Image (cartoon, rainbow, N blue to C red; front, side):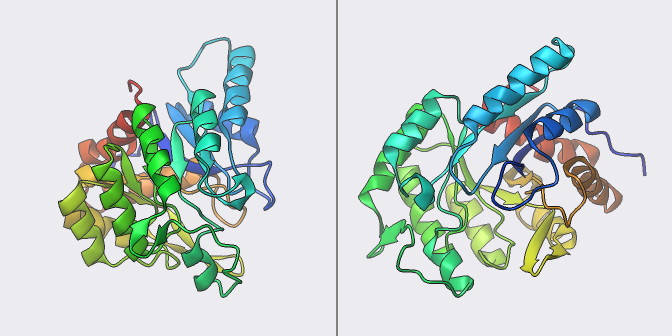
Length: 287
C-alpha cells in the first residue's frame, strides 16, 4: 500500500505539557511537529481546565517562528472537572470568548471515572441526577449552541452519555462527539454506539490506544477498524488522544493509525473524511 500522508490532518484530542502528568511534547513542540508533517489543526486538551490561552500562544509562536509559511492552527478547549468548578457555565462562556472550540464533560472528576478507578466519589462532578441532566448543564448546552462549539462526552458512563446526548440534541446542540467509547473506563458496547449513531447522528471519536493502568496501553486499531465497518466512516472521527510518554509521539501515532486503516481495506477517501472532513466541520474551518 502507498504510504499515508499527514498533509492537512486534524486531531481533536492531544495532551501536552504543562500538565500534572508528564507528556511527550510541550505546546510549542507539538506545534513544531504539526507544522513539520503539514497538519491543518490540533485541539489540545487538559484535565486541569482550559487550553485556549495556550493555543493562542502556540499560534503566536507559529507566526513569529514560521512567518505565515503554513496553515496550521492550534485550538483550545475546556474540561469541566472540579478544577474549574465542575459544570460551570461562566467558565465555559469565558473559554468560548477566548477562542475555545471544544467543551468536554468531566474526565477525572466524572462519577463514572472515579467509580471505575475505585476512588472516592463524594467529590465527583455529576452530570445526571434522577435520570435528568443537572440544570447547569442546560446552560452549557445553550452556550455550545450559541458559540457553535463541540460537546465531547469525556469520561461519563454509557447510561449518562445517552441521557446527555438526548438532552443536548433537544437543546439544539449540533456538534456532539462521543469521546473514546472504546476505552474500558467508558466501556460502551458496540450496540450502544450503533444506537447513538442511529438515533442521534453523533460522531464516535475512536482513539489510537487506551490506558490499561501501570503505564501499559492497548492498541485500539483492530476494534476501530471494525466499528468503522459497522457504523460507517461518516460517523467515526480518527483522533489519537496522544501525548503519553509510553506511546509513540503524536505524529507517529496518527501516521500508524491512518496507515493501518489503509492497509486493512479502508479507502483513502474514507480515511481522509475521518481525519480531515469531520474535524474541519466540527471546528468550522476550511481544509
